[in-house]
Length: 487
Image 1 (cartoon, rainbow, N blue to C red):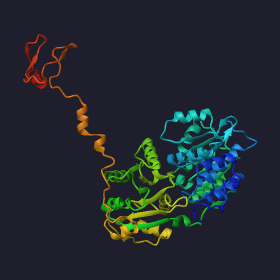
Image 2: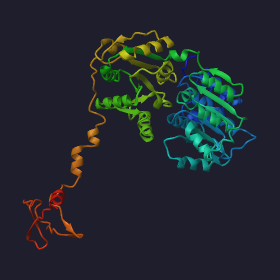
Image 3: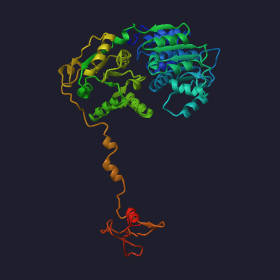
Image 4: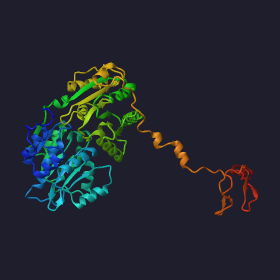
């Protein structure tokens, strides 16, 4: 099934049985018709069934579980919301945590509990504990969090899991890849057995299937597309070129000048390469940010915010750091280094061609990457096992990607001039001028009475003025070594 936007023939959220307050909030956010995964899952989720939703990134999974979650906890006649968490959404990364939190807050805009608003909070690592503990103590209805921090706060007694009636595991395959499964199992042991559970994942590796069987009650498995269509990405045009490592940045600089290019993500396999590519593109005049593990959480959030608001239109990221980045308007994805395997490739290029839009994915394959690329190509049936040898000056690169013939390696002045941030000349100017005639003190009192009108340089290094104004010869001390040797 294609992930294109639903037409008027498809039901509205209201027709799927979603309560008026949520329909109103979604409508104000420009959402009136559900995507495929939402239309398929909502009737069962609203009825209280356990389910597994399988769809690639960008298919609208957040609302597929978010809307039923909000509706069921606010319409349960047997259990009123009391400020003890009633729903828990577990996600693999901080970035996805903030994204899901934002989406749920928007959908819950008009939901109330008695005379207060329904509260949603985010719990994730890389931030101080105190504000998160304070939020939990004030009372929270829905918690979105990453496994490590959730487990920490639960073990400290700040996060109560005994009142949950809804549990969601989002991007479960990513949690498996990041090694979070043991933490997930520890969390599952602390929550009530009587609750509704939903699991969402782009792929279904064996450990995830086993996990689902252990904590879910006869779940319905829903695919929003054919089993292999996640790999084909019908809305994304894919290109692969064999590129020389030293020419890749030149190629990227020209691809970024393609006609119709909007927000673009560039993927690397290492943190070092991500920063290097970001710095080099900034030197060439591109508005670029970076997201990788060597950056602090604050810097990563700042880069993501700039990318979302359009202050930068190129984001360079590693696979791990990019998990959870959920932006619909990305036009191009560039694989600067090829991914580890076919699943990572699917996740990467799934950033574009989303929500009914079309996209372009470009993969640059270095000579030493060719064996791994051949495996990815075969697994996904891309039919490009031996990409054409391509350089930044190759005519077919310009033609296929709609790059203007006059596109060069730079587009303007450096955007991020490090010299401007830390100018050596300015730093020196900020310091007071060193006066070689230092004021000498003895016993805390000055022995050099310089008048304000006195010149800065007295000329002779041998003489200083004494307290009486008469010249005094500077006393020279014998070196300790010499003194010791004479003794």
